[in-house]
Length: 133
Length: 428
Image (cartoon, rainbow over all chains, first blue to last red; front, side, top):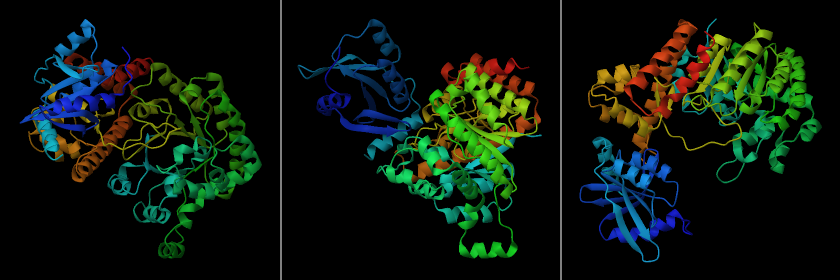
């Protein structure tokens, strides 16, 4: 399904909804990546990658985020994903958030699992970076 | 005969690295535009920091033939170094009109004048730009330095349409061969082509037959990324070398941008390979600069790695001690200095650049990645010069097998080794 909004607009629509539960940081750069949103709640940091299409690219990016965060989500406009895409998300421990443009409701379709990719030292480096933002 | 190690002097910061590794370098290569930036400083550096090191200058005439946005700064203005170069070559009208040089303009300009100005630049620019005190001192000793070889002015040929520039290049070469007597130096042809032209047998034969007239040749193949090219492109490069050497057994041929694959091609007659202090093993011709990010050069793959890939690799091998790091990743003196305890994640952090990190983190990563890269390159050139071609291919094969069996990393990270091996093995 094609949407008339940009990824950046999607971020701006979703961000206020996340602010109710988390501290939110936009465009956090770490090594060669720039994470769309970092959510922080106490000692936990979560990466959110926003995509309108091209899930494969999103998976590559998120795998890098999983090295440095506790959990990661893919956030997309409300749509029905193919079974194999959902399976891939679950296998890789990536959560899925969908945003309904009409109702302004954000739903956690898939719960993320604690990142198996994570390397604590570099996760802590990102955490310290976020604390200074 | 040995494979010569050429390094490009790109920025003032390169000086400290070049000094450190001076004994391992055969030739320093200056790009003409780089010399035009802080000219006095560069000229003095050549005398004071590299007093005996041979050098030559890449004239980079083609910069005025291509899209001028490649040589503009962020504000959309032509970089001052290129403005100065244009004036030196008498091409300031290109800058004034803000349009790339055409064949008609070159002919109107006069090929004799262009050749003479470009060779004169290579021979004299450095000495003309010395600090007055330094100049006086050198005048007294009469020890003025000039390049080891001169490079013929040439335009690039990136597609079949560009072959119309070949006639201009031929004439520029012919004139330069006459003018060179004035300088009493060998004159090398300057081959700047795309992979498309490299694969065009008829075109490449036609070009090489003309360029063979010179005393040697330097070449740059556009965006020849050794990690991503296919087997056919490697074959085509080998064919180029074989063809050139069949016609010019005693003449030298240098690659201006190349990595380990080029180095191995020493077996096919390549005499030297040039890279930068900060990698520069391949480059797009029709392209400006980008944001530099220091990356760790992984010796086993002969390529620079993204920080994320290195973090993953160290985790997955897995490397728990410094001894294991030296065994599986690198045991160069810089790695031994940096990875000095078993807390690998902490110590390896000194190699990781992060675009938004503190200046100290970025500076450390830059210095460490460069020093490590130059140490590994030194080792690679020694290996090429001391082992047979068969040995070198065997080393590649063993590395490839080892990585495949142990699943250290995903296949796209190391598949280039398989492509190299397939081609190189067919020549054993």
